[in-house]
Length: 588
Image (cartoon, rainbow, N blue to C red; front, side):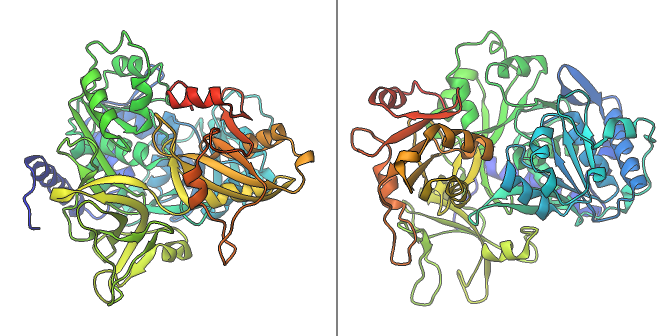
């Protein structure tokens, strides 16, 4: 390597090697086999906490069995897909575990997706059945005529709700199903596909990333080792289970070690520390916005003597890291970088602001043209490695041993593959992320490249948002880009648009349209109305100048609007509102 591992790195990688050795010894390991193992060895230990209720590993296994036997009776065959659109709940984990026991594939739909993006996600899942809860049912009903399955293949989970439907009730049909272990669990293979997890990439609409049993459990091992997990630890999971961090790192770690998780339906800053104390949560998961939200909250009576000591996540800036660790007395924070599709970096040494060190030879940061983010090549047509102090694109080598499964769509996978990086014939995955290399091989996150940016912990596709805006009557052209917002993590969306006829344009109607069509995180924070938009020689809209100009009303004479999340509409961006935002007194 040319440099020594830190003591923390050596300890971490030794632990990983020990646990992965156990994983590789048995080729039939899966979600289902791990749940049965924990139920056999720790039947009375708590597995899940939720809404002040709890389930032991034995009860979790029995609930998984109920759904496994139900879908087996329904005719589910190995490799069939079931799409789930549900908020966090124990049933989410029972269903995914049960479907896995009969070798089904769980397609986890992002609950924030709406209309065209939602239709697309269901279509590329190619499901035999769809499961939806009462919270998500209204959004499914909006697209019912475009779904890839008939009504008798759609099951509604849970009782109550005000939405009328003619789908089937999962609760009623599963009431008298056997809770005995199915004989199919042991027929699983570690290389079987367990999940399709959806991610927005540079091509626009969501893509399905395939995740095998092996990779799911391997990420669970990552969670186990980074959190130094023990069986009496409880992991607080306020992140959505359709997200790789919540499901793979959180539930995967608990499943691997036999620890507990405390689920919350949706993240709440006001209830956070109360939950931590009520569930005696020693560990948690984060995205960068969560620690910032918590720092902006007033002092809480539940912080005193908080049991929280260990965190793992991504997107935590140096200043927030240091303030959070000091104020809330959290000694172990592990930051990592990694796409759902493939691996990355991990910082187990507690170096604030860094995502880890460039330790392994198969990961490179290569030089790019920062104007268009194109990867640069030398005279031999190979990529040029960054030196300390330089930022570039992260490429991860793909080999037969790298456990790279890619996207469900081969075409989508091929678009992310780059060859002849270091030598002729090699193959790498382009993460689409720009990172900075520092001295001693330390690495920090810079930004998403090209047509995506990160906001509220989600990757936002500019091309997808542009196409949605262009579908609104009266909009002639649209360009979307990410802009830095004071006192906020990531980049908020900004749309510059031109109109066919400004006299007939109604900003309130555009607000309603965006609110009903886009996920909350994808709605542009700013809208700028232009007379025209500059294009390149190939008629591609120029983003660079617009990004540099930003949204300062002192410098821009065009009409500017800002999204008001309290009332879900765009309002004039005045100088007073701008000053309030710059001072950090405006929440998004």
